[in-house]
Image (cartoon, rainbow, N blue to C red; front, top):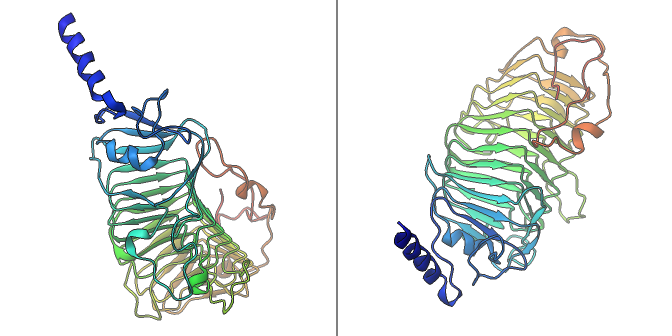
Length: 393
């Protein structure tokens, strides 16, 4: 037994002769630090320098642990290998350390007006892979923050995607069973398209069942908070907040941002019939609608959600959908609801009367999150009369 152990140690030592790391195994944790070296072994005491090097070495079941600091990218991060259902790959911040992935030096930050970003360059993190967990990362200044195409069975938890030159987080093409949990996405803008494209979160131009958005906060983006443009499969949205979207905070010329809190579909009654389900979600102070079907012809459901002080309609569902609205609250919008062929029961406008709130102070709901990443609870926009109508987080 002792001879076997000695031989194993010799093999491991030989693997790093010349400064090259040993291949990662399923049980590996590789460390990356801004003061590391890609000739290191990737241990905590000898970390790698680049996230891409760690990705090239990691195998199913492994973890890439990023030490705190700003990782300024010379080329975007490409994730094209997959984990497995029993052995996903994890890319995570180390402990509570703050990890910033900065794409400012990449191309198309911003692109020229009217230009198209080549597919492979979309995203400071560009992902075409499955069975990954991305946890606790902050992605800024990229040509998209996270761009995930053809991605299945991934978990994206406690990410921040801010100040990117396109949508903060975009999932598209054939992508199923992804969980986007406790995302903060804000300040994203796209000068190359005069503000008509950069959303906080987009799940669009594709299909795939089982995609869930939970606990997202999407604010001050140039176009929409959430956009499901031309996505043909149902998306579940829960406990989410969208506000302040669609205003030209960057003085973009020929501005064309839309400004919906949640855009739930296609275009002008010709979009795909996708039965998206929205529950316990706030949409307020947006430049256009709070919630809109945007031409989705499907049976959307919106339940126990709140539209407040949106510049247009609180619940705009007359674009071709057969939306079912139940126990929602609309106050202070230009128009409460545009119903079309949709149905509504138990909502504030069905009940009637004057609606006031326990609190209009958003400081708690928009402030620091709980330790687990969830949004802190408050009485923000809870009806003073105690009715079980509208969202509460």
